[in-house]
Length: 79
Image (cartoon, rainbow, N blue to C red; front, side, top):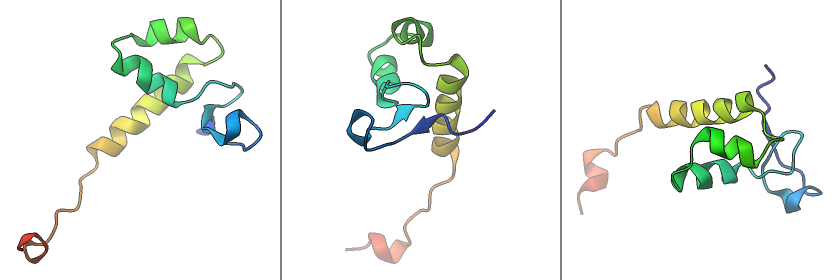
């Protein structure tokens, strides 16, 4: 699958990142999930968003959150 599932274009939704082929802001997925809705409920509300695109975005976020973070050096913590 093409991993470009979200894009931004100044002529579409004022440059807001949207799911490719739609005018649905990618942020709306997080808003729905945060509000307690399921992925199926989200997809029912936004039928132009493909399930595999939403899943790809969720997996990418999980991957980013799972990456190790750089811990500050002790000298940077001391005040």
